[in-house]
Image (cartoon, rainbow, N blue to C red; front, side, top):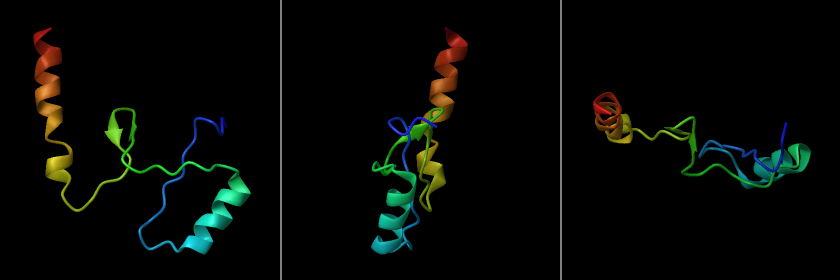
Length: 65
């Protein structure tokens, strides 16, 4: 595992003490906030429709290329 390229994603229910424990054990300081992995958002809220709205347009652009 490359710790420099790794991030940790926590639930909004996770308290700060637990986050600190995870950071300490894994030795990964960066938290995944609004990042993407393989082009997809790492964190989805309740509104997945808006989150993925860009995909059909992106696919249409790729198909036309």
